[in-house]
Length: 324
DNA sequence: CGAGAGAGGTTTGAGGCTAA
DNA sequence: TTAGCCTCAAACCTCTCTCG
Image 1 (tube, rainbow, N blue to C red):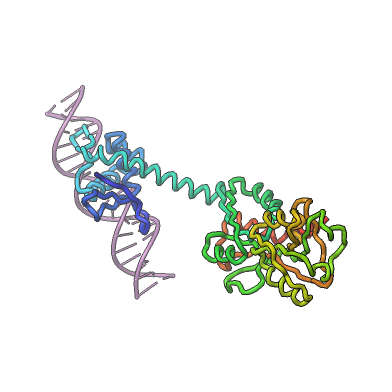
Image 2 (cartoon, rainbow, N blue to C red):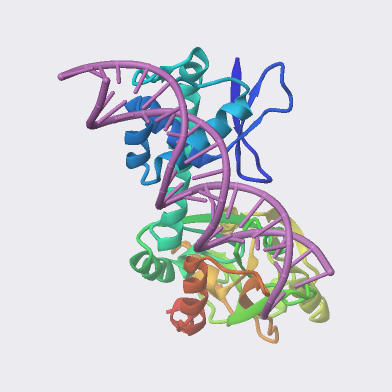
């Protein structure tokens, strides 16, 4: 029984018999020549098919036979035909050549941009809607774009970026980040207090610290600014009585809109939330966050990733963030 | 960057087999 | 018997890769 495998270190197909752990080195050109001879049963015509001279093809077949330890063809004058080993080798070698050709085609598609994979890590606190106009533009430039989005906390998407699991990350990180990270600040936005549209404070134009004295808070555990919010409220002598917490924006919105509590969220989230939530500024509370695009410095981008960086840096983000 | 090694190629020719 | 076709080997060329 023969097994065929592609050696990861030297990119050469290896055939091994179950009892032979060493295996034989088989080059792709040898497979191509072998298949041509098995098709034509004539070395000269096979050489013509392969666009090489007949001695070159003969030598390649001999080398292949030497590697496998037995002849693949019986040379009987004008009656060249496959040996038992040759017949046994035909299906796996055919398969391996097809696999190699597929791999080559796939590589060419990547090179031409026909297939353009793009993996982005997106912080839970950054709404996908912000990226949609850029994605639409990118799809025009790269029709074969295969976008893969990965959600997580700010620190987890940065970890994915470091590990190479994503090419780009979008988050509101401003503290300690890896020194090899390139960061492009895209926009800054205020944090607003979110409350149910039919709640008691909803008709006010702003909220004061005293309005919050009895408030029950819904916290967004995934938010990069949550610590800054707690600190700022403490300075205003507002104790955050945490009633609920959510690690998804949709759960946060559901809890707030149901009247379970109030909570802080960035303007971009509020703008993209449903009409059941209103967002108000809190007098004396000035917390901003900056959403940035991150990439690993010196790491080569895919064409689609490079395109996204260009588009993101030249985009007018105020349109996406400013509430109507 | 140049020298050397190695691999794959070509050209040429010898020798064997087959069919007319 | 012989022309034609086939395989194979030797000599040499070219290209690529590695190493100092």
